[in-house]
Length: 177
Image 1 (cartoon, rainbow, N blue to C red):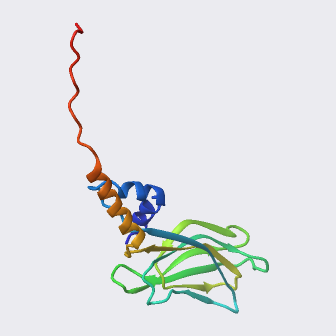
Image 2 (image 1 turned 180 degrees about the vertical axis):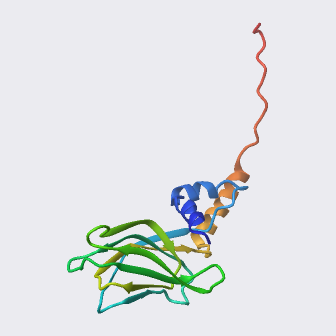
Image 3 (image 1 turned 90 degrees about the horizontal axis):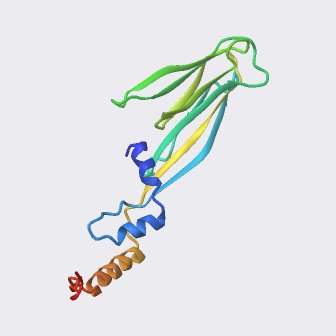
C-alpha cells in the first residue's frame, strides 16, 4: 500500500468511522494504525556501514524517512561520502551516494523525509566520519479483522433503520390565502 494512501486513511478517527458505519451505502475502510519512531545511526571509521531491516513475517508497511545527515564531534575536515544501498522498482540492489559532507563547507544535509523501503544499508564510502543519520521509522498496519463490537453496531444500525417511521406528506391548511 502506498504511504500516501495510508496517511489519507489515518486521519479517520474512531468516532468518524463509527458515524460513517451507520450510513448503509458507505463502506468503512479497514482500521489503519500508523506508528512513527525516531531512527538514528552513526557511521565512522570503526563502523563503516549500518543495515536497517524489518522482520520478513511482518504484514505491516514499513518506511524509513530520513531527515538529516550531519558530521558530529571529532570529524576531520575531509570529504565524507555516504551512500545508500537499497532496491529499485525491479527489486535490483543499487547503491546511490546521498551526501558529501565536509566540516568546513557542508557539515550537515537536510533530506526532508527522504523515504526508503527496508532493507536499507548506509555506507561511509569515503572519509572517517563520524556521520550521524537521523529520521523516522514509520509503520502502517491495516487490520482486516472485524471485531464483534463492530458487527453488533452494524446490526443495531440496521434495526434502527427498520424502526424509523415513513415520512408522511404535509397537510394543507385551509383558510389561508
